[in-house]
Structure formats: C-alpha cells, structure tokens
Image (cartoon, rainbow, N blue to C red; front, side, top):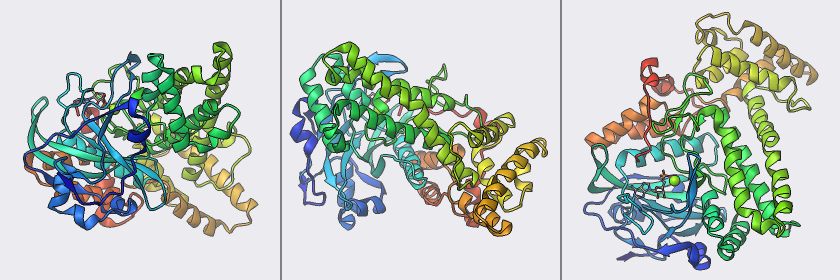
Amino acid sequence: MVSPAVFRFDNSFARELQGLCVPWQPANVSAPKLLFFNHALAEELGLDADSLAGPAGAATFAGNVLPEGAEPVAQVYAGHQFGGFSPQLGDGRALLLGEVIDRQGRRRDIAFKGSGRTPFARGGDGKAAVGPMLREVLIGEAMHALGIPTTRALAVAATGEPVQRETVLPGAVLTRVAASHIRVGTFQFFASRDDLENLRKLAAYTIARHDPAAADAPQPHLALLRAVAQRQAALIAQWMNAGFIHGVMNTDNMAISGETIDYGPCAFMEACDPATVFSSIDQHGRYAFGNQPPIAQWNLTRLAEALLPLIDDDPDRAVEMATVVLEEFPADYHANLLRGQRAKLGLRRSEPSDDGPDAELAEGWLDLLHAGRVDFTLGWRRLADAAAGIEAPLRALFADASAPDAWLGRWRARCAAEDAAAGLDAKVADDERARAMRRVNPRVIPRNHRVEEALAAASSDGDLAPFERLLDALRRPYDEADELAPYAEPAPAAVTACYRTFCGT
Ligand code: AMP
Ligand code: MG
C-alpha cells in the first residue's frame, strides 16, 4: 500500500548509485502504534505533520504503508569494527526510503531502522526494540539542542511484535533523518574490492552532495578528504566539550556529512575522567572518552586509504598528499576544541596562539575536574555562577573546597585583563560573562539514570510519560527553570560506577 504524497521525495542515491544499494521492502508488522513523532523536525522538512501524527502515521512509520515516492533501498558498506576490518556490513535492518529537500533547501535522507531483515542482515533478525530506539530519540534531540551536528529521529513506531534479545522486548521502527548515510565504511566497501568504478561514482556523488566546492579543487578527492577531516575535527571537539562518549566509533559509524550517527552504547560522562567507558563491549577502552580524537584521526586514515587510488595514479604520491591532510587533523581539532573552551570559560578575546596560555588554562581546569572526579557538566555550569561571584556551589563539588583556589585565581586574572582591555566595568562584565557562560554550558544533559528510568517505563509498562518529560527537559539544556532541577543532578555515584550501555540494540 502507498499513502498519499506527504513527503516530496527526490531519491538521488537510489537513482544515481544503483550498484551501491539494493531495492528492498520493509517488513509488515502486526500492530503499529506511534510512540514518538517529531513535530519540529516534520515542520523543518516541510511535511504535513497533521496527516502523519495520527493512525496513518503509525502505519507509515512502522513500515506497513510506504509513503508515496519512497524507493526503499538497503545500502552496502564495510567497516573497521573495534580495529578489525569487516568487508561486508551494510544496512542489515535499515532502509533508506529516499531524500527530501527541507525548507532550507538541504537534502536530507529519510531512513528506517528496525524495518526487517535485508540481504545484509547476516545473522541478525533485522529488528529493533522500543528502548534503544527511544534512546536514539533522546540522545539525538539532546545533541541537537546542544548545537552538535546529529542525525535526528522523526518518529518511532511500535510494531506490536516481540524482539528476542537477552530477554523478550517490544519491537519498534525508528525513522531517522540524516544529511546522508554515506559513511567512511561506504568508501571502504568499494576500495577493499578494488571496484574503482563504483568508488569513483560514490566519490563524485558525495562531492556533489556534501562538498560541491571540492569539485573545483586541483585534486577533488583530496579536497573531499580534507573537508571530511575538518568536519570531524569540529564535531569531535564539540563532543569533547559536551562530555559525550559515542561508544562505538567504528568506521561504519562515522558519517561523511560530519553528523553524529548511530546512537548505540553512547552516554554522557558524569565524573570527569578521560578513561570513562560505558559500553559493555568496549573491554579495552578503545572508544573511551579521551581516545575519541585519535580514533577519529585513525578512522580518517582509513578513509584516506580508500581514496588513495582516486587521489593519484602514483601510490607513493597519493600517500604523500593524503598524509599532509591527515597531519592537519590534530591542530585543527585543537583549534576547534579551544574555541569551544574559550566560550565555556567565558573568554571573549582569543589569544593569538592555540597552544598558549588559554589552552593551558582550559587544560588546568579539566585536570582539576579530573583530579576531583567532579561531575563534568555541573563543574562547567557552576563555573558560570563563579563568574557572577557565587563560588560556593562550585567549591561544593570538590571534596576539598579549596582545591580550585589557584586555578580560579588564574582564571579571574585572565578575565579581568580581558575586561580591562575592553574598557568594561568589572561588575557589568562579570554578569555578562555569567550569562554568556550559561548559554554554552548546559544545565540539563541526558543523565544516564534518567534515560534508563524513561526507557524502562516505556519498554516494560508502555508508560511514555517519563520519556516525554525527559525529552522536554533535554530540549531546554540551558534553562534555569525550577522544574528541570531533577534532570540536572548526576546519578548517585554507585549507579554511575556500574553503568553499562549495550550494543545489542
Ligand atoms: P551497528 O552496531 O548498529 O552500527 O551495526 C553494525 C552492523 O550490524 C550493521 O551492518 C547493521 O546493519 C548490522 N546489524 C545490527 N543489528 C542488526 C540486526 N538486529 N539485524 C540485522 N543486522 C543488524
Ligand atoms: Mg552502525
């Protein structure tokens, strides 16, 4: 069955890249029920939200009734998973329905996750459970509200069917919106098969879609690599400034677009510690919080390898050129990180050098949070209070209230110098600084215990109220409203110490 036009599809991937995907249909499910619909995103996409929010939407978003114009395909890709190469992955339980041009003229993928087995399902059942799909909604919307590039959930529909995991769980289909689903692993798939024709087609498509300026560069594929690397440098810097841990940064989970993609065992760090790992399958800490920047560079190196045959016919020359781009990554990342840190520290003026006194000031602050195992989010947020002269809440985060003395002294001196140079009155400058800091240092993030509580209620009791309340809070991360207080506090330390996220999503 096909429903009337609600999405105005224009399916360039299915049309232009036939060798890179296979047409496939979503499974029919027995009892579709809409659990979540993203009105704001539907509006952004220019969809008729009214016709999708009701029962027709349930049938559409569960995969029973394809929207008119959809041409569902399963995309192929490969990928390095925890460092080992899997030559054949692909959409095992996902389908790209097509693309829509949004109100701002951006091309966005509309895709299902959990819509049944495909030819790439390997041993998987093709299904997804309610809990992990609602988790993707929560974390994705939180990231979006924090201004971090991310894929977003348009809808989640329950299927009314059981999914066998460690226990039996209720099934669901997620509808995901992405700038595209092209991954590092998509390039690896064709490169590893020496399929230069499709590799070239994929690269041409990617350049046209994501980096049109690269087409005019002296070496377009090198320009593509540089553009992807620059987006990742910016993205990972944002993750690091928000305390976000992706958890499974395999090359098939790194999007060329620079959006955060694939919310599996991800979580926000609470007590500050670069070694933090939540994922149950990340036993060696490969994807620990502090490892994310070098892992991003490692993944980009895999992308570079895949692009080498397109960069230059002479392999040595190609390696030389790609190496130059890859070696720009650390400095680019640090520049992005420091830009974010300056804002978080309430500094308006940038010092000329990226490894100068401001970088040391930021590092000193993180060392302090780490040494005291201080909650990362609260630490930053209460620094804003300190900017306005209220230091007690910040000091209360440390076992020894005098621990931040020396650092606070340095920070105040740096702030005062900046204010004096700008000719600002100290009191006015302090208040303005505190306000600016509260606009970039969130109060509300997806606290692990709150996320689990919301998902448990939705999954076991079909009670969506805690999920909806949490979602509402996550959409207002900087808000001081009293009713958000329960979402601003860290989990009891004992809960966080045992917290594990699972990939068996
Ligand atoms: P992920 O860990 O979600 O990034 O997925 C890694 C690979 O496993 C991808 O090729 C997925 O399509 C596939 N996959 C994950 N879960 C399932 C499932 N339940 N059924 C089929 N394929 C799956
Ligand atoms: Mg994935």
